Image (cartoon, rainbow, N blue to C red):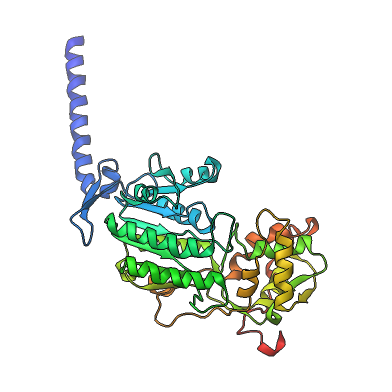
Length: 398
């Protein structure tokens, strides 16, 4: 009797399992493919303009592989870390050449899954080192740049000579796409050495790699910037007042560094920008004096604005920097405070990539709150926003 019961029970279990399999089979086709085969999902695509292919694996995100390999030169800089993060989110394998200590790049390892972020020691003066950094990549980002001369490199070496060498080696190694980051307001005849060498660098890179995409960001702000943090340094260490150049009439269009990095990551496989210029500046324009006033209002500070002639500002900058390991403001940056941000007609912008950039009003509290005194750490922000942009403040009112 027990044997009969066992047989009947086994038969009933088999029937239930069969019905369950039928139900799963009926439902399965209606489920998204990536939910059924996340680990096995893959796609093979040909790289445009080449006989090479890349293999895409996974449903997307950091734990996937987009098939692209990107090299980010200048990855440990202000903009570089945000570019690496955005590429990592797309599943791109990122080669991060670096110099200095391991501490300079270890935060980048967290921006991709295991094996996706590949650190590589690098010397810009060694061509073989450059080749090793780019030979496996189908896209290379050159973010290398400095705001001032250092004891190791001049602005001409960094922005012209080394940029041209990188472009030439990328062409020789068969890199499909080169994205060169320059700066807004570049001009070969600029009184600013930074803007002059950036312009010469664009010309040299274009000669070596004609299809290069040149990206010109405006003045960027963020956690590690040299805009809001410099104003914060003035607030903390110059109680006599904040220095203002050009009577505060210089026009500036600050851009959030995260928005710039987002566009740079999109350029990885966007053909619209090949061989073109992309200018990335903020949606609102400010007179520099009103930008300083904005910062003081947000930080609840009451410092005065001290208007200085150019030669005095340069002399003070040079003197202060003699005692500083890293310049707070260089004489060349003082020169740039006399140059307005002027968009280039015909250049691609955020709008061409369907991206609406953040305005300074939306983001400033994240970075300026650090410089509030203790009693104002939790003070409201919305109540102090006034009129600061050039559209709202007449030129004769500054």
